[in-house]
Length: 112
Length: 114
Image: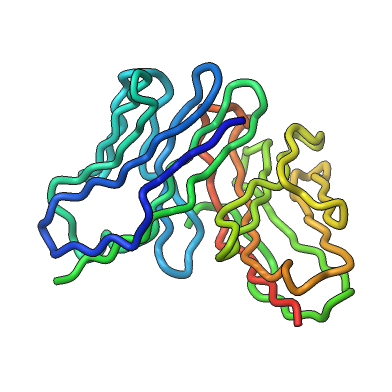
């Protein structure tokens, strides 16, 4: 079945450091891929998405490229801020079953 | 603010009891999803409705049931509650439930079973 694997956290970085959170997936067909972010005490909100191979999603300085050959959708940001501290979820949504599968989440702490 | 509302915000109950969680989707959205978030299981998809009809089922226990009403609000019913049902329950909505659509999440209902 479909699955999403994210790097385990927590990830602790200093402000202005480079961020990478790895995400790989297993799916049949051509799923859509998403990164959602959950700030403390809140629900998830969409950070970015890509719906086909080689698409790059970007938002608020975050980027991720849909790589079908490596089945990956790694999240990157060039310079993190304290306000980026949150839990990040990689997710896929398959084209046939209408189910969305979420990774386990990666907690990011950014120190000033 | 995502536009998705969930009530109640917190719920404390005892084992064996039954509770109902309520969700109102964003204005215009026809599809509603329910998720359970717990420390050991992560975020698990439970069930999806589209315009009143069940569209997809995930890891939803038989003790749990849901429905979407004609006004598009949805309710998740949890019965014969066990300690392990303690979790955050999220509702999300999207326009038509397509695989490429963004899901908009509510703030969640925190359930504690004692």
